[in-house]
Amino acid sequence: MTDKLLVLTTAGSEAEAKKIAEMLVERRLAACVNIIPRVHSVYRWQGKVESAEESLLLAKTVKKKEEEVYAAIREMHSYELPECISIPVSGGSAEYLKWIAVET
Image (tube, helix red, strand yellow):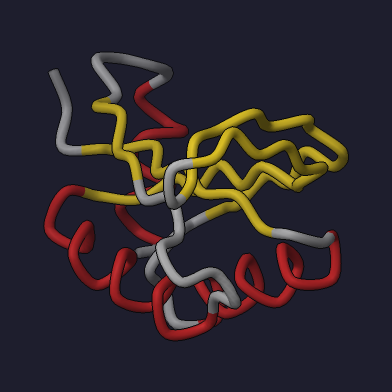
């Protein structure tokens, strides 16, 4: 196990996703953020089943920055309750994992 994380969030548009991604990297909260446009989400919100086209963001960061990443996402996000889910990175190339640490 490493101290690296993959933080997932979604955004309602590619423009919003890009704004959030750039902010996370500029603030050194993430080393890299991938944006996957046009994912289709089905979810329950306020008692109703909803459906939306969103962009998925995958942010590479370190455990010690996790709460700061969540706070920054909430600050920049248009959603009332943005997705903030962390997935621990159990391994990877040593060079890439070191790069994540250096850039955050």
